[in-house]
Length: 59
Length: 462
Image (cartoon, rainbow over all chains, first blue to last red; front, side, top):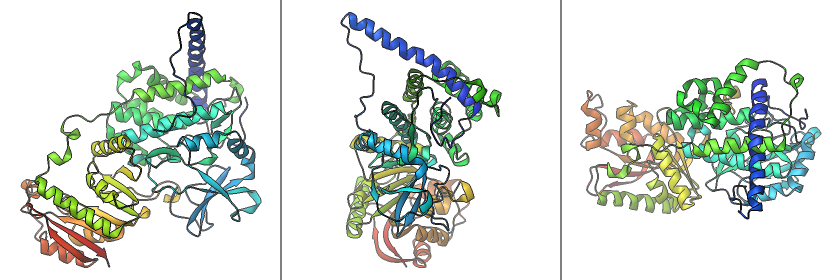
């Protein structure tokens, strides 16, 4: 397990483990969405814009 | 952040993170970036992440300056962050303000990940309202992201943001006051216990709060390294998006009269209201204050009048619905000079945290150049039994100039307050009021409000 230097916060054992479990599950969702987008792309269906564009202003 | 400083010159709100610290010199706030943080700082600045976040209004801008460091041995650089117009704390924010702060934190995390960086903390105290927007003020919150690494700030994010937002939206909006007691956010076992059972059927709240609290209980004190495990970038994205979707769905809209137009339920006429506005406008134009406090601001109507001639106005009110309405309005109008905040004047925000010096009290963040106290005197003197000389003393500590409205016993609002109790306030008269306030203030003007029995005063602190 790699931590960047200076993890001055205690991530907490329980918080850490539950995060791994939840994120693994949610990661599957992200992977599925990406694949599904590709499949739809083969049929010419454009994906909905859900990704943050990295530039839009704080509202 | 706080206005105070320790004997060494450090800002007492900035000590946990070894990456650097805040200090003030000659009235200017600086941040020392320590050598241990050099790599991360260079990456933040060099990757374009800093520039993108600042441009989009998510991160406080700073300049690198050639000031001598406070601790030269550990110092890499000194930076001067843009001054935040007024420091406020999450227990003073309305639901919408805390939600904006939470969503800003998650957007920053998403954008940081794209630049291979990640937030190493997610404290609500790192967010302040600048130009009306929830803005990250801790430039040293970023670390290099290595795929596999979980989000070290996940627990802090849930405690500082998700738990109080869920409690406010689904239980009671007043529960944000728990943040005043728990400086590191609402403990998740407490949130889990207080939230209604139906929240267990909400995937986001089930996992990030209920199961999270259960895991904390079960694995408390256990070492995690031995268990290994790592988190893909996709999993990290899934986690952040899930927190974002859970928070997006939380909403709080006060119902019934709480949400009505405040000024429809007042007892004075349009002419009286306009006369009051005109006087507040004229007097603030004459004073041109840098900082105005509107104490008992309701939805901020008079704050906006004063704001035409003040650099910055803080609209304080005791009613979470009024503060929420004020915040939504300013967001809609893109108002930059206004900050609505929650405050009980009879029990203002105390100094809290380590040595009681991490977060400033209400008074330590003053005095304001100008304070408005419109239609509040009867609540302080009659509902709360504060003798008039003590009310005068409190205002004299809070501001240099004061616009205060005296509401006499003949006024129907005061009659209402006295309807259910014995009148033990023989000094609550215009004469009694003036003589109490003359101890602390020079009365510069006193104008009887048209079509009302009230008097508006302009006073200057002695």
